[in-house]
Image (cartoon, rainbow, N blue to C red):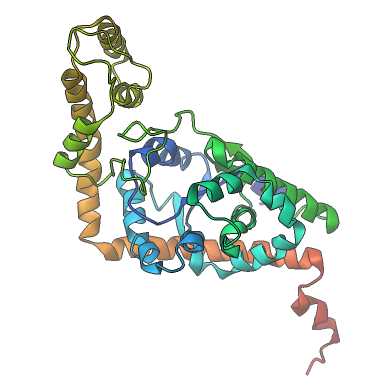
Amino acid sequence: MSNSSKSKNKKPVILTGDRPTGPLHLGHYVGSLLNRVSMQETHEQFILVADLQALTDNAENPEKVSSNVLEVVTDYLAVGIDPKKTSIVLQSQVPDIALLSMILSNLVSVSRVERNPTVKEELRQKGIDREIPLGFFSYPVSQAADITAFKATVVPVGQDQLPMIEITNEIVRRFNRIYNCNVLMEAEAVVPKVGRLPGIDGKAKMSKSLGNAINLKSSSKEIENAVKQMFTDPGHLRITDPGKVEGNVVFDYLDVFDAEKDVLKELKAQYKKGGLGDTTIKKRLNGILQDLISPIREERTRLENDKAEVIKVIEAGTRKANEVVSETLQEVRSAMGINYGSNWSKYKRHE
């Protein structure tokens, strides 16, 4: 088959991933996992378990990262990510990504990284000033290396991560221009249609660190308790009181998870008018979430009892990743003229 035929038949490459700092939750499910299950049918998909990037702000507690690698991959498999269609990759076990990151770090300035709004916001949230770890600061370059190493042209990200893709594409264009080549590929950012799922406490973000999440491995009782704690309308004190739907976390979740949209529309109208209690809508949401998470939890339990299967999936995906990334790095070295093995071969004596 010709090279042109191969390129026509080849699926576009998608790179996505997570930092393994805790189990995945419903925010991950609607924000990324559902898309991954769908896109593995149409793309060559690599999911990066970004343990090295997780260490950039957990270097003094590496066990928090290492202990969650199997947790996160178990979540992937339990929701339907198929290792026959998706390569699940452990970042620290693909050393050529780090080499590529070192090369790319020379193509972006400190001031450019400092202007990145995502980096600025992360620093503000974590309360880090000039004591910022260098690895954390250089995260945009590390992410650029992840993306370009796999020649990914599609990268699903949240709205807040769009500046990271901009820097990646700037680095790609600069590399290709300086070295007069087309080795690295620009990537298109894809923002999920479903917005960020709020925490059960009404805060803008469901987060592992904030403790306001419903994990995919939550027990039936944990789900029920979480729904009971959900923020509704503080002014809706009696069933007969008119209530607000906007900013009401229970309705935010029903908007995402309730398949009966006509019924939901009627419930909203009734709640706004008065005559519908918080207990009723919470009971409805609890039933929907129980039905959603129950089969995921059952599959997780099976996988937790067969960790060898999960490890096998990681090893297979990481082997494939090493082959792909090694080829990219060889092309990068050749374009730069630092592929010394081939450059020096003409000077070697043949015995």
